[in-house]
Image (cartoon, rainbow, N blue to C red):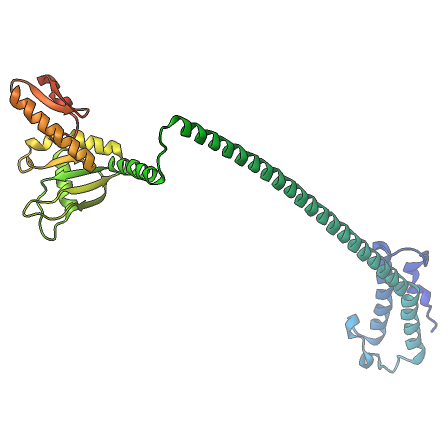
Length: 314
């Protein structure tokens, strides 16, 4: 029985050799391949294309002519359509790959230009900032020299470095002392817990400040208890505690306890002189009420006693 190869390739009728591979052409080639393999499966009695093998082809009715026909059909499909289109597809892939490579090169070049531009901008900005900084430094140095010149002319004697450092240290020390209070007359015992003792004293005047540090100061002299120095959070809290310090005079067991500001040695000497002056005036004029206010001994009326300076201790 004569069989024609063309009937398997009828799906590809009208296709020119130079026609480019596309989805429609691929489907037509696949149909021709399926037509050939379906016929082989039918003649050898198998269901799937994957079952075609030398064993299944070894049938008595499968003669040389039939095998040659199938081979001719497959070769025609491969040589006339599949291989040329596959070669064309490979060329197109190579071309696209080349295009991609060229695009990547372009991107890399553009990135390099962007980086170069950024570096140039940064260099320009750095140069500008350095010039501005140099100008500012020159201006500041010039102003300092002018100010120094004015000081040297207007001051009869400039402070030495040691005197200047001492002045700064004194100012810092005074600032630190504004956050401290010193309590006199607190009984000193072995293994004492100062925080508990001082908290009880503050509670007697209706205060409960946060204490940052607490310790006794000075050397031990006989049976007299050493003063207790406490550091509070702010000068405002210190002033609030000092305003209520005189309330301890009315509390049983605390009449000999005094809450005072943390004074320097010079301040304590000056305050001692004020106390001596206060005692003298009270003895000379017992009918008047004297107190210390604004670092001066002044006479106040009976109604204004409550306005006494905080922490005066008198």
